[in-house]
Image (cartoon, rainbow, N blue to C red; front, top):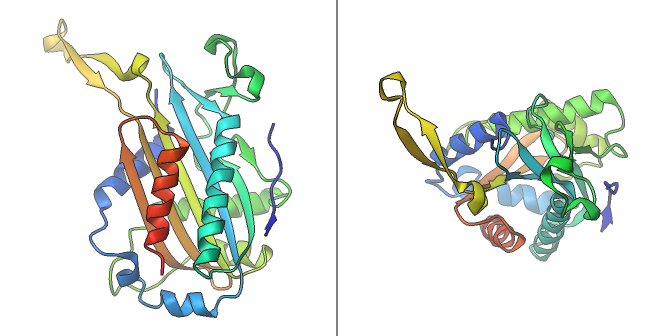
Length: 271
């Protein structure tokens, strides 16, 4: 399997927060296979597959911003690629390409985060870290010009905001998926988003002012960690969405073992 990727030396963005809430209430009343009854035939017709991922876990810190550890997020993205590629090939999906497309491409570019850029900065005081706005990384080897990067952004936004496809609804087609799919060699395209926030104990409990009539009252507010893994499968020739599924977890701390379990749950649903 060839890997197309470059090395990269308050809460998640508002966009990702809204996506997480929307997905939480969408629910999964029916299995993906019941919603995509033609998927098995599309799988059997496919002779190649590509996996793309965008992964960002934000570490909450005291104050009005968050911290993004690019070293750790890069490791998470590559771990996700390895897990998906291994399991998908075991299931007969012929994965021959994979890439970390980006980190934080669909996040609000107006937001500012503290950034850990290398291993040496992991233990530095938060106030000494540099800052940056999303996206934190784009695979410029593959998405080398602004037009292609805009097509990728449009594709990702449309995927994140499409409704959870219901039974008997018509197929969803995304033109940018066909353009990018043909550029990257066609076949089935697996797009995985990993988004979430880590809320350590030091910032988990806070207080919030009540309204003017209760100005002297403090209301306890508890933030909790959350993480979502969202998988979409596209036909790289037509741009049709042929599968969508997601797993969401709340509470605890986001770590690779939790993500490993979530990825395997997604993959267990695939025929």
